[in-house]
Image (cartoon, rainbow, N blue to C red; front, side, top):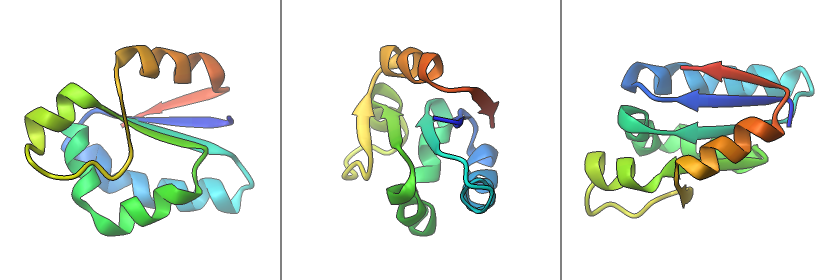
Length: 96
């Protein structure tokens, strides 16, 4: 994967959607990992629709349950081990 977007803040989620579009226009493969308040970004239906085009989108399961209790998870639920694996598989990490 060319770019992994690491989303750990609520504000980072608002930046992710245009960055995903820009990465796609540039022909870059991308993925996203959501943790802590970044999990809140997954409540945005436009963003979750755009995530179907990335290689992999994962949310920290603990963060999802903490910040979005009772809601169905729209992406793969994982752990910080998943985060580490994604970082090892990507060329660049963009932290939001």
